[in-house]
Amino acid sequence: MKANELKPGVAINLNGKLYVVANITHTKPGKGPAYIQAKMRAVDGSGMKEQRFSGADVVDGATLDRREMEFLYDDGAGGGTFMDLTDYDQAEISKDLLGDALLYMAPNTTCTVMFHEEKPVAIELPASVVVTVTDTPPGIKGATATNQLKEALCDTGLQTRVPPFIGNGEKIRVSTEDGSYMSRVKED
Image 1: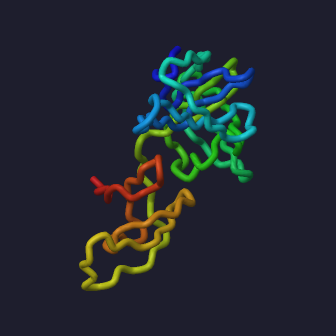
Image 2: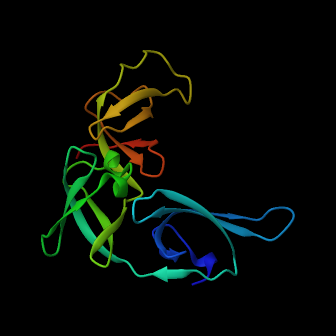
């Protein structure tokens, strides 16, 4: 595949190692050719790597098996247990592989887990998730300034900033890309 076809969630073989693309930035500088800056996570848990490609570079793509799985529980060491929704098999996924993903996942949350040769290699979260605010200071009465935010702790351990009208026990929607507050979720 060509480097300009890269997108988050795609797996590539680079220098004999398997990487999953986490972030892509296309850049066209004022002088010189355009390039693609890829931030990738090594499947073996050795960390993140940034690599620059030109649009015409050819990369060795790898095939990943995507499975819908349900997050069951946190193992206490930063990893988690997931259950396949088709055959009910369970998989243990380590903290190295999950990164900060557990901050966006309450038990029984569904996500996509990517496997390579029957081994989990990456997790794909939805664009946004619903979490419950467990601890936030009360709003200041009469504070009407725009863009005024306060700290909030959510049930998953995520810390974010919310508007003053959000209180303890309220459900909010947050972005899984940066953890930012998106909206209040109304109970039906």
